[in-house]
Every structure is written in structure tokens, then in C-alpha cells.
Image (cartoon, rainbow, N blue to C red; front, top):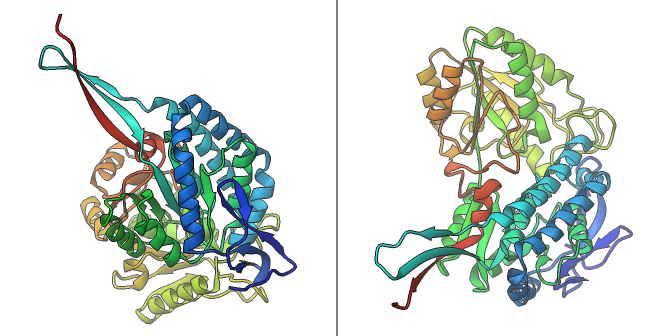
Length: 487
């Protein structure tokens, strides 16, 4: 952390309707992973700023929750419109601070705009119910009530999408929010906040703080104003948050780690399957919670699939995400690249064969560029088979029996996503029913969409985002019983 700005732009915190600096004037440099250069300085606060943001959200809550769902929807819809109008600019910022190719960044911004629009409409459907009475003279109903002040915490890999999935349903439900983005990627979310402000968001309804994760997280956990925490990140940190929430019985939503299998059956074209697999694997350099990370290929098509996968992986254009035609950008940061190097070296030591890639690219003087990697001769003891890899590595295994591959696919503590490539309806149904994952893509490597639930089983999370379930996560159900007068 630095205590003075550089020539780069200073971006501020947003608390109670005002852009402000950190109390101590502290800032943090945001680094472009393609150039390793500081592209901007952002105000870097802590517990005091977070406390003020929570207090602002508490003050704003009564008026915001009393607005009709239609009035809240107008602001969310206008936010979506402004995000679409500014998609190119926001995407450019996203690529510069996160590294993904510009086309992926723009798709993320547009997907997030769709999320705001979806919840603008879904907020109008926060239905209660009338329950048949069993005693004459009584009537029973349920009504929905906002949870209250919400803390939303997101990581760096999808800095717009993962906050949109929290902000939009919370605001639609009548909650107010305090957002903490990853310190390394706050700039694109600042631009989304500018859209919300221009759309008419009242002061205090949504606030933005950047600072040390431990400090801000402790304030969220210990401050009774905060009634819910919505977190996307690692399973280990999710467990810490869950334990911390127990002290005040805070509501919690957790979207955590994954280790998704991709299963290829022999009834479909293996070259087409390889193309789908490579697309899903190397999107955002494999730095995606639902990215396929273990590839089980039927022995009958193993050779053709492997050859095609290697060819497609080698053909991917690696480079600065702002350059035309680039399909794979740099890894997010130096630490992530070193972890990938360590994973590949562990596999090599244990007998894995590198078919393509396997090293840091030597084509770039700067930047965290790692070659898309395909491996075979893979055993279940490799680190990349037991830990969430979050890296551009594609380990290939084979199988011959359906029941065996289901057992292998489920043999993990994670259960976020799974993928199947088949044209056999019976196989597709058996896999959909047998795989232990909250999201299953059949011939679809990118299944996420605002109207469908997103979340995991086992240690991959708690609750669901998006869809109707995503709105319910920010609502309490109140039961009201009436005793009518006689006569």
C-alpha cells in the first residue's frame, strides 16, 4: 500500500452517496497483468470506512424497502441500459486490470447488465401466499420482507458479474448493500457504480469499500448492522465466514470452489467435443470456478479427442487481451502463474506427459503469460486432481463404463459444476441424475444465465444465486395469522 497518489488516476470509495478517499489517505496500485504496470491508484480503506458504509446502508434501508418493486425496478433497468451503452469502456477497464481478452470482458459486462434487468422484473414477483385455514374465523398469509443490510464480497476473476449477482437481487428485494470487490480489480465495479448513481440510486443504498480483506470481513462479521453476507471465493475462506456468521446468526450465501469433470462419450463427434472442451477449459485461462478441470474421455474416442484437443489448444492466440484476435490473456497475477508452474511440475514428477504447453511463455518480456497446457498419463494423486486448479491446465483420463466415470467424477469434496458430451438421451439423463453437482452442462461449456439457478453442492457452497432462488436469498418469509371478529 502507498500513501500518495501517482500520475495514474485515483479512484475513490463510495459511501453514503459520496465519493471519498480513505481516512488515512492510503491508496493501492492496480496492476495490469499483461504489462505489470500500475494503471491506477484506488483509495484503500479499512474497518472505519466499512463501518460508516454499513451505517449509511442502515439509514437508507427504511426508505428503500418502502419503495414499490416497480420503483426499484426503474433504477435497476436504467443501470442495465447504461451498462450496455458503456460496455466497451467498462470492458476495456476490466481487461486492463484482470487480463482476460476484450471479447470475454464485454460478454461479462453484457451478462451483468442482463442480470440487473432480470432482477428488476423478478423483484415484482416476490410473492407471498394465502394458506387455507383449519379453524373458523382465522386467516393465514405469508409476506416477504427484505433481509436488511447486505455485505457482498467477490473475487477478481469475474469482478463485474459476481457483484452483479449480489447487488441486483439485494436491491430488487429491498435490501441495501455494502460491496467489497477484490482489491486488485475494483476499477470496473467503480464504473458500474457510476451507472447506478446516474440511474437514480439514492445515497446509502449501495456503497463501495476497498481495503484489506481481513479488516473489512471482520467488520461485516462483527457489526450487527450487517444481516447477511454473500460471498464468492475459496472454500477455505467460505468456511471462516460461515463460522463467523454463527455469532450473530447472520444469513449467509456461499459460492465456493469447484473441480468440474468433463465427460466425453463415444456416441458423439470427438473433434466437436474437443473444441467444446478447450473452449470451456481455457476461458479466462481456466480461472473460472465452474471451469472443467478433469477430462474423462471414453477409450473408444480417446485418441481422436486427444489429438483434436492438443491441436485446438496449440492454436489459441496468447497475448494482451486488448489486442485483436487474442483468445487467452495473461494469468491474473504472478502468484497465480507460479501456482500453475508448481501444479505442472508436480504432474511431471509423478509421470504425467505434457502434450502441449507446460511452461511460462517465452514470447513476452513482461506479463504473466502461461501456455495452454494439455496433459495425459494422469493419476488421481496429482495436486491438480485434488486441489481446485484455477489454471490453464487440461488433464486427460480415460474410462469405459458409465457407472465407473460417475464414481470418479463424484470422488471430490467439490460439487459446483459438471459437463457431459453426448448425443444419447439416456446417457444424458443418467449423468444429470447421477452427478453430484449444482450445475450440469450437457454439450454446453458455458451454462450460466440470469434466469437459471447458480450454485453448488457439498463443499462448493450454500444457497443459489440468479433465478428465482437468487431473489429468495435476500428475503425473509413472515407468517401473519388473523383472528376475525365473530358475526
